[in-house]
Image (cartoon, helix red, strand yellow):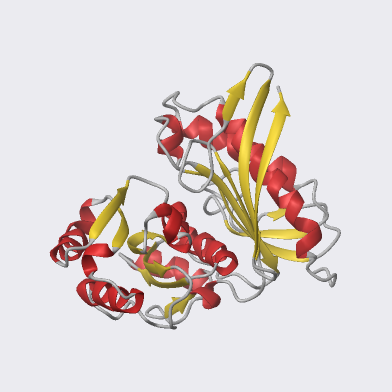
Length: 319
């Protein structure tokens, strides 16, 4: 492993180029109804750009196991092999369905930290809970009931439950959660896909109108969301969920011993991280790709946890 220090400032612009390239590659497939082709285009472009970076990178959150994913699989080595050893978490196209149907909030997402800094989350579900910055630690927890979480956040915010909005992934498994939230008087923003964006919304509640995220979604996306919140500020908790012995076996393979552990944000991402996300379709975090005659324009959010910096970058690319 490389002994070179993690140069987050120098690597951040390169990371933005990686997410931009993936977004531009998937642009031609927006609204075309082909999820797999859109995802593959983003994967190919992201891998090509990653291999241009002077890093000794290992994908710890990727497209699945090696036999399931031809590129950007968990454990794949990327980069030139020169430079710092880094962990990489990525979702080349977060919202493949959103892209195929031209629906809001499809993103290309990537995070990078020093080697060994990210939870090697197996491809299982995770029960997630997130709020934005400015609250006391543990004001809400996974051990609370849904109703207790809403009441506690309202009290901390100095408002009633009616002034709280919770983001939830619209799935049959969340019917009880939705019913419990609505019984408090709180509002719900239902999303069809893209729970990395869902969690990020909490960090900018004044802009997005979302105060809290909760529900079950992919564990790999949980690590990506924790990377974003580490940069933007906010609290997040996750507990891995296992449906069968195969999934428990995946956890063991990833080195996870305590299957009931609740991970806080800084347990999922233990050191400083850089994070980039580029809009594919229009969303409440970044704008989607805009086509003009001879050009395509992207918007990328680029963040560093070390400084708390959040950049919004417009890239006008000749085509």
